[in-house]
Image (cartoon, rainbow, N blue to C red; front, side, top):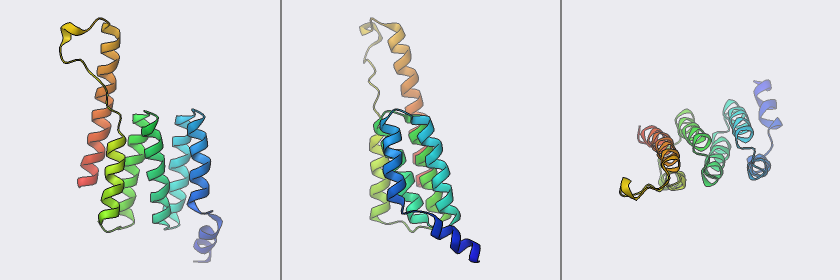
Length: 147
């Protein structure tokens, strides 16, 4: 029991970690930041500081998605939903607003209305791949959130 208390005391306020991690993302180290988000949020979950873990994961998902890092953002978004369950966080308007914010940040990938309008097939292929990644990440997140 005393070990758990010391664990809780060792963790800084979540906002300190959020600010540090935002710098890492803004420097372009998306994957490194994602790994740190996962590691730090797991520490807060272990200490049963679910609210702070949720703040960290929400921030991470949002900033990654705002930088068009769909895979990293989607994984953090799924961890956000998973932590809601672990912490037995009741559904309310604030949670819904946080879920909506994540959803709205999934980047939109422009695709042409008609294939005959396409001049660059390589670009079209890349856009289709990006759209597929976005749809898969976003649908996984939405399915988990609804569940």
